[in-house]
Length: 116
Ligand code: FES
Image 1 (tube, protein in one colour):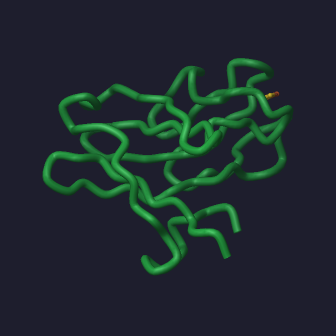
Image 2 (cartoon, protein in one colour; image 1 turned 90 degrees about the vertical axis):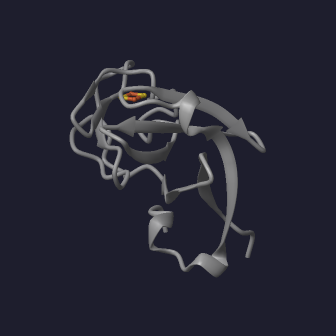
């Protein structure tokens, strides 16, 4: 399971990662939660979160150029859809994790899977 957006709410823990003021449209933030690098994007007022680890060679992917919803890995150019983590081009062949995002009281929250 890579797309954690598909999990029920009970299987997720929502964690605040920024205020909406800190993440205006066109911006992205990259941070670590429990050693997991995660990136959140604001694209036209909608928020998307992916794991900041390229499935090709484990490099950071989220600092690369973003075109519409496609992020390009700065290392070897693999592209992923930030909406769902789907891989879109070689050299990567595996999706990357995507997380659900919600906004409550001006805070941007991402849903992390609970340990099973
Ligand atoms: S590490 Fe991302 S394309 Fe190679």
